Image 1 (tube, one colour):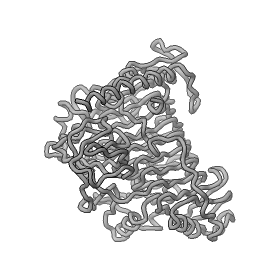
Image 2 (cartoon, helix red, strand yellow):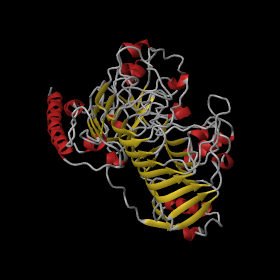
Image 3 (cartoon, one colour):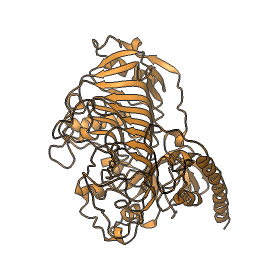
Image 4 (cartoon, helix red, strand yellow):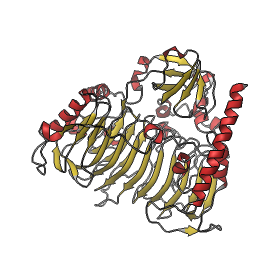
Length: 566
């Protein structure tokens, strides 16, 4: 009884804080991330309109049926500043030379990174200039930051691709598809042990270990089982707290049952999800158990407080437990540089050679800031990566397959102030463009303040859920991917909030007809053309639309920032 009373009291206090934040959000004057035409239909005033959905959200921020709580997404639960680690190495001291591409500097840069890692972390400096790299750059140590002098001053010029450097990375489902289409980077942040395991498997033509536990799920250890709890709770009760301590990173694991009630819950529940046939969605079912890494904030007897609210209900039929996980990369980042690949024609669809940009794999609390990638097959990747922030990133050059991809159970990431530039050469026949991709049960990720000159909001099947796109201008020219075996395009509680579609194409923008329990708020008038989808679930989707036919007048203008202000 006492705990229940405390919960109500805390919720009441939070409601008061939200009301203050809402007043600030609706009264202030917001500045556009990118210029865009404005519409003010349906009576929207110059001061902006506050949708009913926002008022509802302030009353139930952690359990709203359409809008997920993402206010703690990103590095260190959304902190605004990245740490300034002391400089421990300068790549010039290890043999790197800014000679406009005459010298291969990859060995020197990797030696400097390794030295910083063995010293316990720190910043590795790359001065202004152009440095040729004939190998990929590996950040496999925690608390190591690779810092250039700024994306306009420091350039790494990459001459080779991942197929040449590591080998053919085939699909786990056979055929001639290249997994470099959605994996790996020429700057690759990944724990050293994981990287070694992965590259060894690729060279042996075996499927490597990708996710938080991947194809080595037999090696995880149970720390404790959990009592039932509701989505949005910060605290859980455990059977045995003896192996838990504050600051510890653990994995919440939820297994599906024979009736697929976990997948139904991720999709919002109801008759439509119950009628959906899950058993032949073999790629989707390979993603479960659902694995969500989270830090423990406090241990008080059998009550454990988590860094973030629970993403889903915790029910006995899903065998809920906290487990160990592969030691992730933490506290590492890339800052202030451009990675430019040698310019080659874009490969045919799913045959990418691996001229990929920056990838975070098995990474937690890591970041990229002021980083540009140019002439890449795939731009920025999140693979089993959580609580990472990509800030002031840009994809430029001849055109990419996936400018941004987010997959294999990536959660709570923040991509803000991002740009996808218009391609500099026409797309070759047989290629494909996606955009900001999310798939593979990835959840609670945010894309905020973006300028997309091309691409789309690519939900790539695999039942991603509870993701947010907000305050973005997009020329909606891409297409989504994902095959039948990956299951639904959308799980529940996707939110598109203040979206400016410059070519008025509806596909994957206005999602009330596709995404269950979704919210589309503040989007200009759009029409269907090009790729047109039908909903995966029958019946009422319980989706919401507000301020349709408007842009930039919705208040709060940016859903993520408003949630942060609570």
